Image 1: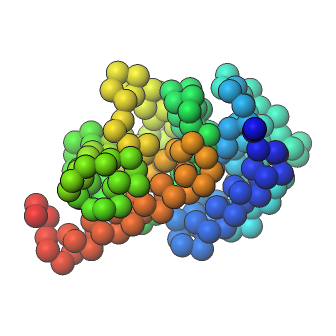
Image 2 (image 1 turned 135 degrees about the vertical axis):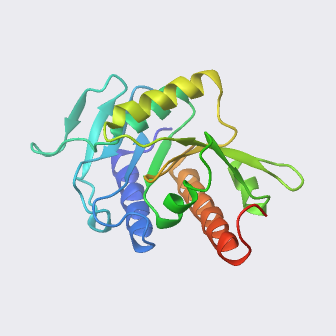
Length: 210
């Protein structure tokens, strides 16, 4: 049974406050969304502090890009098209979270390739990679001021080559994850941020290329 509007908003607000407290959504940066049904989803309104997010700070969007605010002057986050791309590509996705952490931006410059290899940590299993000494690549996309350019690049690449994990990284911008529930999306953010922190500390203590 689909979750109620109140429940979804409460879960999204809780996640936003949690991420804000960890320095992953400072200021008005980052955005969260949760699917209402096959064609609609709630997404954070533009310019809202994630540390003080309220149930009124969400826009009702559909996959065609039409939207309805809860308050007259609110508009969707500038990065809504990324959420729209994920929901269009992956019907099973029920929530999509995008945060801006220092570690994600540092890691995004560890390579110039279109993907970055994650270390064989146990945490990778939480992203769906169940292998001995698991390794996989997280897709990496170039950043653009015009966010729909990023969204189109995501659609183009993932339509041809689906990602191995429910996560992608945008260079010097942040990470986006998705999951089959708000709880799973929140777990995925925690997992990737743990992995990014490990990668940064590993490079500081051991050096690149290890």
